[in-house]
Amino acid sequence: MKKNKLIVICGATASGKTAAGMMLADYLDIEIISADSRQIYKLLNIGTAKPTHNELKKIHHHFIDCVEIDANYSAGEFGNQAYQTYLDIIKRGKIPVVIGGSGLYIKALCEGLFESGIVISQEIKDTLQNELSQKGIEWLYEQLRQSDMPSYLLYKDRNPRRILRALEYYRATGMALSKAHNLYKNNRDIEPLYFAIDYPRDELYGRINGRVHQMWDMGLANETQSVLNMGYSPSLNALNTVGYKETIQYLQGAITTEKAIEEIQKNTRHYAKRQLTWFRKIPYLHIIPSKTRQIVETITSSIY
RNA sequence: GGUUAGGUAGCUCAGUUGGUAGAGCAAAGGACUGAAAAUCCUUGUGUCGGGGGUUCAAUUCCCUCUCUAACCA
Image 1: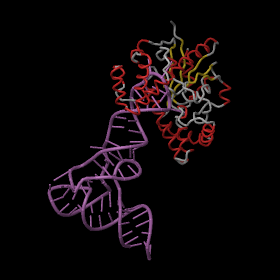
Image 2: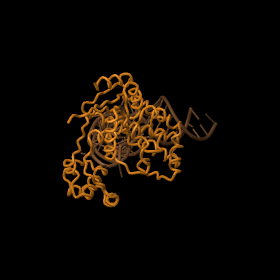
Image 3: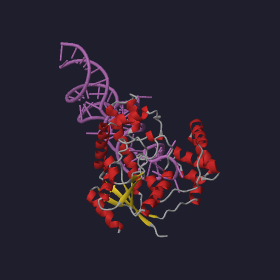
Image 4: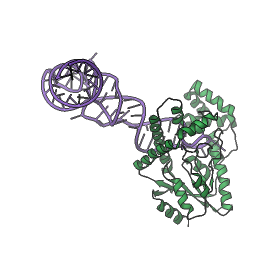
C-alpha cells in the first residue's frame, strides 16, 4: 500500500506553531488537524492559547472546541476521529497539516494506538482507584506481576497511571495489556513528515514567561471563574491543566496573583521540557530554526 | 555606636556532642499505546562569609574583621 505523506508540525508550547500554520496557508491549500489535548475542550480559550477567531476563520481547523469540558476523552479516541478527518480532507483535495504539542495525540493519529474496541467500565476504574488509595501502589504493582509480567517489568518506576491502566485492561478483558499491544496493531497508511520548531532553551522560556503575563492580562482568572460558575467541578481532568489549576488556587484565595503567575510560568516550563523530551526521540525529525520564513520553505520544499 | 540573631548547593533551610555536609524547591536528563498541559523515574562538591588561634584534625570551639536583619541609642 502506498503511504500518503502527512505534514506534522510539532514543538513546545509557545514555539509559534499556530503562526507557522498561518504562514503555510499562504502557500498551500491546507486544513489543520489540531493535536492538542486541551484546545480540544470548549470554554478553555485563554489558558490554552487557542488560535484567535480570525485565525480560525482564515483556515479550517479541526479538533478545536469540540469536546465538552466534563467529557471523558482520550488520545485513542482522538487518534481514530482525527484519522477519519484526515481521510476526509484528502478526499476533498486539500492538504491536511497536523499541528500540535500533545505527543501522544500525534502518535495516536499517525501511527494509531492498538485497537481492540474495548471500553472499560467506570466501575472497574473506580474499584482500582479505591484499591490504590487503600492498599497502596506496591499492592497494585504486585497484582500486575501476577497478571502481566511484561508490563510489570516495563513499569518499574511504579507510575500509578500506567499500572492502573494495565490492570483495568486486564480486569476488563482477561488479557494482559502488553499482549493486546502486540496482538491488535493498528497500522495506518500514513507517512508522517515531522517538523519541530526549535528555540534556544532560554529564549523559549522567555517567550513562555511573557505569554503567561499576557494570558493573565487577557482575563484568565475571569475565564476560569466563569467556568466554575457554570457548576463544573475544579477537579475535572480538563481543569487539571497548567494555567487553570493554579488560577483555581488563586480564586480560592490560596495564593496571590504574583504567586499564581510564577507557578503557571514554572509549570509551563516543566511542560515544555517534557514536550521536548518527547519530540527529541521522533525518528527523521526535521528541526526548523524559529524563523517563520524558513519554516515555510523547509516544509514546502520537502513535500515535493 | 550598642545588643541580639544570622551568613552552609541557584533559592529556602537542616546538620556535624570537632573527623571537610544533606533535604525541599529550582535546574538538567529520561520514561510514557486510550486521563498525556496528565502521571512517573534519575541526577546534589558546595573556598559550610574572610582572616587568625586552639587541636593530630575546625564548617563545627575561641578571637577578629565583614555583610544582613531586628531592636536599643
